[in-house]
Image (cartoon, rainbow, N blue to C red; front, side):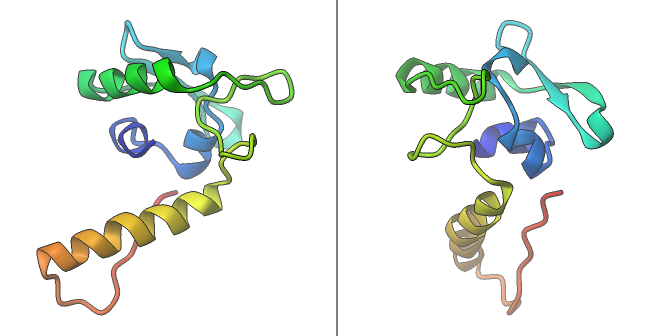
Length: 112
């Protein structure tokens, strides 16, 4: 999820709303519905596509409201964007802040 978020330059809500049909691994393209319902095509890297291929091989397919979400929770629902903020801030930013020895008391996770 993090690679897709980063390499696709996606907002958290865009990532959470991705469906299987939005992914074209051959062309390295994601079809994204952005703000105001506007559709956009974004490119991902080959490394990101390789990771997504591996993920799709082991992930069980799931249908929610007639759609097949690309990413979903262990409880069979779409990931709420709020959980992305909490998870990535706690797991990644805090860890890498310590490793980089950044002295700031506050570090921000900004994802639109």
